[in-house]
Length: 123
Image (cartoon, rainbow, N blue to C red; front, side, top):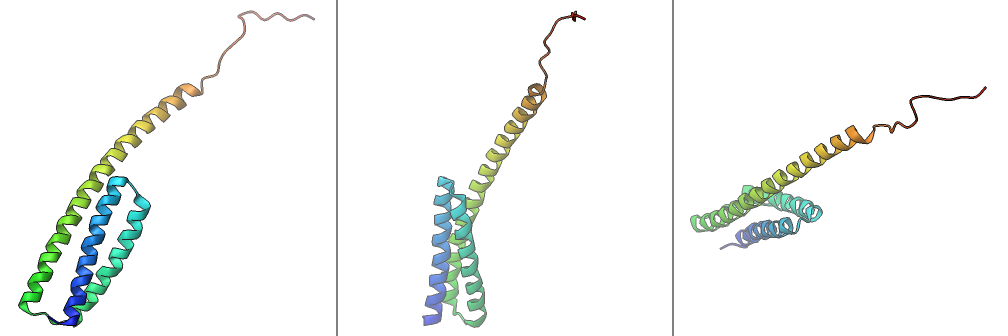
């Protein structure tokens, strides 16, 4: 196996590792860190795309990379499912808050009426 292939394999493994880290961060609901990890993953993917254009792989090397690619895709699919569930939960919470706000606004702006039916003034 060539040195170029080994470097490409390392890049694939980095993507897989980042994907697993994103899953853990999703469980912790650390969304700011997820965004930075996604940015890093995107940069590595760009490097992989560039490397794939320049490297000639034999059949064995291609098979190894395809297995890694399959693992990455599976991990990404799991991450997407988790994020979809979080999105649905967030939408439900927003709907509840919106309903509460509407009720609060509706009944919160009624003015208290005080006084009596007859008004007495002295001249």
